[in-house]
Amino acid sequence: MILDIRQVGEPVLRQRARPLTMEEIRSPAIQSLIEQMRDTMRQAPGVGLAAPQIGQGVQLAVIEDREEYLEGITAAILQERERIAVPFHVIVNPRLTITEEGPAVFFEGCLSLDRFAALVPRATAVRVDCLNECGEPQVIQARGWYARILQHEIDHLYGTLYIDRMLSRSFMTIDNLTQHWADKTRHHLQAGLDLPELGSPRA
Image 1 (spheres, helix red, strand yellow):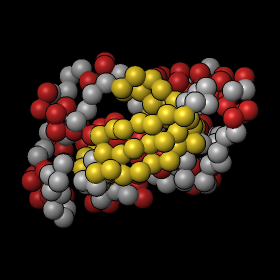
Image 2 (cartoon, rainbow, N blue to C red):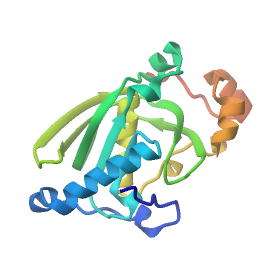
Image 3 (cartoon, one colour):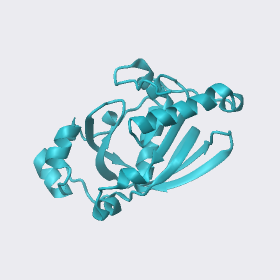
């Protein structure tokens, strides 16, 4: 079942989600919700989906950066973004710790702000302590694009959207990003958008 993805302005996207109990995590209702969130994320398509985005105010998110999403992206860009495929997994009641500040500054979008993107500074590396879909403790060490996805989805669980962190002058439609800015270096982005120094993605 494909769920409706809530768009910016929906109150649930600005509320702090509540933790799930062990009993809830293992319940048929949450197990079914995880399957529906996975199918909704893939249908969109996206690399992550948090429960508030489908109207559920609980600390649950699904993540998957599939090999097919990397096709057509140059090796240089994949290397710059430190982006690799990430298998499907679930994070419940996550707690994020920054392990390498960065910032890494890249364009980011969101399924709850359909067809828009902006440059967003994020930490380069993070640790996430969470539970999986079975309620088992997990520790995730991530860097690069995977770390960005985790930060984005965990933000959703606290009522935060990427527009709260973005470089506002870089906010644009996906179409204009593709047409005018996608292949630009950091120097050209700074000059063309009149932005402050972006620095190195790993600085």
